[in-house]
Image 1 (cartoon, rainbow, N blue to C red):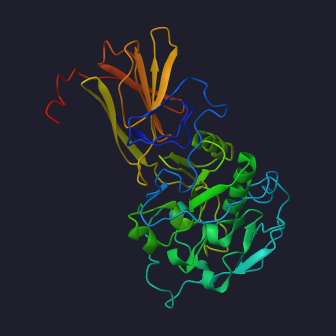
Image 2 (cartoon, helix red, strand yellow; image 1 turned 45 degrees about the vertical axis):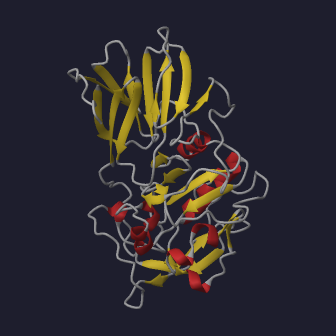
Image 3 (cartoon, rainbow, N blue to C red; image 1 turned 90 degrees about the vertical axis):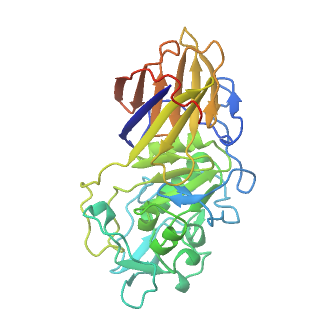
Length: 377
């Protein structure tokens, strides 16, 4: 039996929770309410869980975790300025970008250089009519600055922009402030696996054509102390425009936030937005196991979190796994995919009806029964 769905992605998901597990294995089961923060804590960098940098929302081959503390000082620091709720920073001089810095005074400033014929290859941005995807015109020359320079109390240049991903880079000051806020709110170190990527580097790791990492307003990250589900909630609290959940990390970006004029000669209107990305999923059952095939998650393998309910609506178990065999008492199934959509099979005894929930949208579909469609696969 097979059930298909196609819907626009939405930035926030108001259904379900997410837990960390090896989606290539038999699944990770937990009793309801096992963790106080709503999920399992992710593995520390290097302690399990791959980081395959690939596209707009997640990392893939060649993207290595950065060594060090990733923000090792105690919680309670930072978060002010742009994106953090503090006092307005001083206006930067022309053709320079200013970051919060160690003292969050926004006086850690760097000159920006105009992109010209002297730039190396690998800086051809894709053309787009959307102002949110306008190509930057000025960049920071990373070769002129020490990678250890603090952009915020717990983040340095080398954690967010690396010369081996492109000598010339951009990273929005509001992103640095938000990362510091996320670090403070989570109460421990953040491993930012991917910040800025030049178009050439992004293409080399099979990144999405319009990956937000090329525009300096995205981060792929995992916390050393809280679950990915908690990180999702924190990004939602900071009004992230897009959140994608993967097996090893979470992608949060603020693609529709106004751009810093230090990087863009013509400021694109923040009110105009491109079409939302499409996520596609197919739900089907083979020999008692349910599967959810997906496309549109272009940075790696998305989370699949299965929830089984009994006839009274009580949760029997929650499992993070590629596929799922529910307990005999299960009447209703839900699978959350990548933090973007949830497919629901309300009655296993009458599986011709399913519906999908995303944010406040509820859509009911009735499909003809497909007997043994997957036989022989």
